[in-house]
Length: 113
Image (cartoon, rainbow, N blue to C red):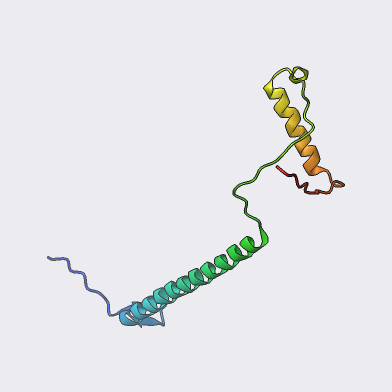
């Protein structure tokens, strides 16, 4: 006795309804192609939207590659600080106080060097 596998020409869906294998293959193929096309459309739309967001970001921000800050009125006597770390801490506190103050307006000073 030899076991053989015979494929039914139709797939029984319910007791009253069956589909031919060719129809199931066609439905599967159309579904796969539709999903891939929707994915491609979504990726194209997402790329366009991402470029628009980048352009908007670049238009609304300022990029600075090179800048300098001049800090004046520093104490001349270095003995008032115990070490360099305490000087750095007080300097950062001063900078934060100046930057975070809401009532202060920034007026650029032009100096002849």
